[in-house]
Image (cartoon, rainbow, N blue to C red; front, side):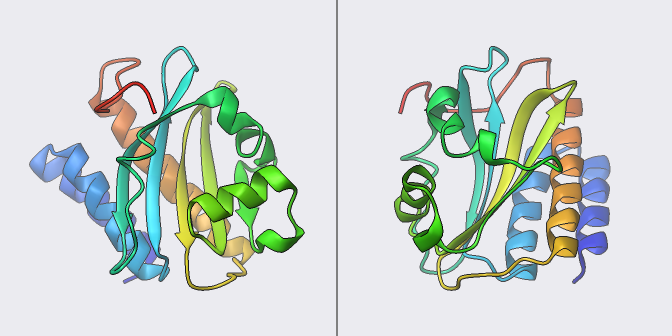
Length: 177
């Protein structure tokens, strides 16, 4: 199943069922399986920019979920090793931890990941959130085309979420770590 087919299914599922939340959860699973990653997750920024919430997560077989333990994180604590690391395209790519600065290396270790790809979604310069992909098995070398394709998927998913919610609304279960 290709990325364009997954994006088409997301749009179809949202339109037919009206269930954006279910369509997004299904999309994360399909993306994880298509790209053979261990974990796919979505973080959304709060309206005030203080917190990032892990609102969706899919994990492959045998991979520990992190959503409950990392439900919310202060954005300032993430800035030091995540948000400021996004490139001009909104992509954060971490292939191997050994060569990284300590904060970014810690990010990999905390997630039991060997490589991470994150795709930021911004609106008018404001970070809405990001879609992340962890590989806990391999030091993955993502191609530019894969990163761009997943960045497009992130934008489609965030657009659907924002259209289905009230301004500033985020689905989360707790406000503290």
